[in-house]
Length: 489
Image 1: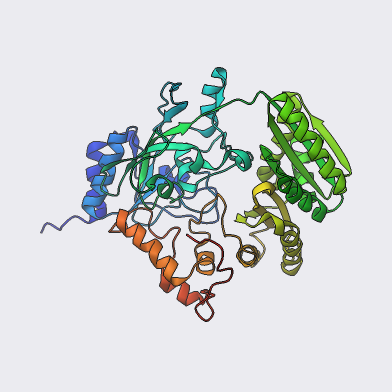
Image 2: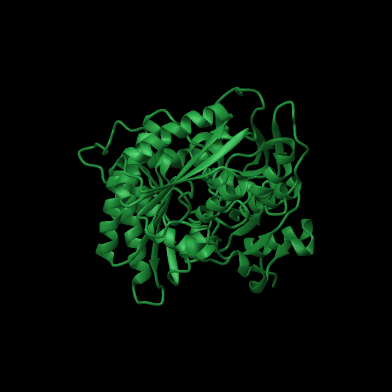
């Protein structure tokens, strides 16, 4: 008797008919590198891994999965930190890493078209000889892909002045869940209709799959200087951040690290960070020489008014890059302090920075777990790194609970549960704290408009209302939400 093929068997056979043998992985050993993203505590096994090399092949994969009713999990370089690319059981993992085309620079429109598999840093490496670069620079830029940057709306140390990914993408080609092609955005200053580009960017693969995008390029600044300011008190450093912005100065980057992060970074890269400091600020200024001189004088005055104990200036490129190397290597450096660490990502109003850091220190003592703080101080995007040992009973659960309380703290002071790492699966429960049932229902309606059958990256980013009800996490009292004056999604 002939038995009907299951959708899973049927989809693998159909994919094998359109993809080269090396572009379809089905054996457990070959799929193991794809079982998680940068959040390695959360793992899964996909039905198979598809590695198409062209947009047409991506469309074919999506069409086949749609026809067989099989879910698809898009993946970039796998450097994400929220589990957004974790495979779902029975789903096809769609890797976009091989779509690495980069067109010639469009000098007339000062942009460049790239495929989603292109590494972030590779764009500036190609364009810098022409006096241009791509501004968003996540710490993982040496490895992370542009497709993943769009999915998470990544930022970086220079996002304070030059914006997040969403501010630096002009247009994109997107495939929907059925494999049908959409062109969104425009090289013109505006495009007709709704701003769907901003909706796609940061949607974590739930609404569509990007197969190419036009990126804005910027001229390399005429001059750049970097100030390193060391403080004996974290609160004073945090207050200095607010004072610099309040003075009307917009640094290219304004980063902060606390003592634990400073020591870890210095042990790792040996760039001369002051170990005795409670906190350091890295403040980069760029522009023409006259502008920098004026801003530098004002920043130095503000830093002295807030009790800076050690102030250094890096004018030459080698010294400046060395100091930034310490900040960008902070995440792997902290990994040397404990067997495991949990990287959080929340955003707060920067005027509450000193207060929130003090409360994070209290939470660290409460749970008995060290926390190293590394963050984009200028825009209030925090990255507390919670140190723990997964081999010690319950420590991982304690780290997760500490992280959840930090995110609740961010919401309580008027912030959000993520700045650039996305929700993925890591912050699903925290979404129940951030949003009301009505707001979450609207997010589900947007998802349904793009993907009616819910095939793209299911179970990520937006929790079900049932999940939130089970958690009892809908903090809505008398029909009102804390901080109603703040804009929500």
